[in-house]
Length: 291
Image (tube, rainbow, N blue to C red; front, side, top):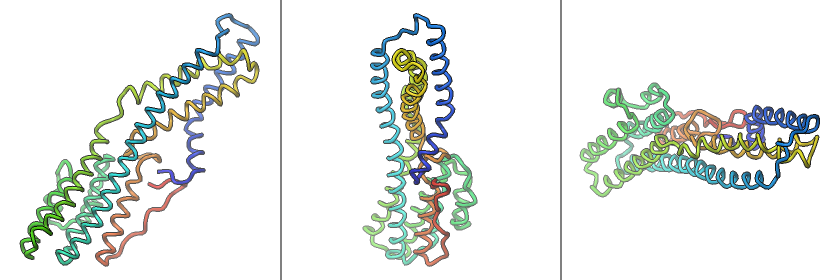
């Protein structure tokens, strides 16, 4: 996730550089043809292009709003994972007298969830927080995060019976585990349900077509300075398209994704410190990007 505004602007310009270069070159070609070898088909009125541009902006606004809602929902669900993990560790200390193996297993759940959403192997990170018995039970499971959460629920029941915990207290712990399962389900829904193809592909195609016809409607009025005016307007549309494309996949390994590594590190630090165990340093932005 980009946390430095200057980095964000610089990255947007860099990512749009190829499209802007192609647009500027096309604008120059249009100007040269119009000024040196005028063709009648180049006498295009500005009104139709203006109407197309207005409709395209509305269409892209809907797409970008939808993409941002996906990104923000993903971040909100991860916030729920953080809050419930902290509450779980507190309940382990106040109701079960510590249960450090369960608190450490909750750290493993966070890492397993991150690996499952991003599609990367985080087995070494997960297993260093699990007891050998728990690691053996979840090894080979297709959904390791869900398997760890299930095993935590079973172990909580065993601990509650051994310590004769009141059923109401056990139910409160189970509620937190259910909230974690609901958050995981919401995150997996976002990952498994891509943005509709009409929203993810059509705007990019329409922006390219619009940028091709844009100088034809401006060259009659701007003449030799058309490349500058057309490129500036084209950049606005290209930037809108890039913004929507960056946000529609919040779990990809990109600077625009939800900072899952930093979030799971936060869970790890908070829960290890609750156990009075050494904790790593928090993740810091690198070149304005929080991983």
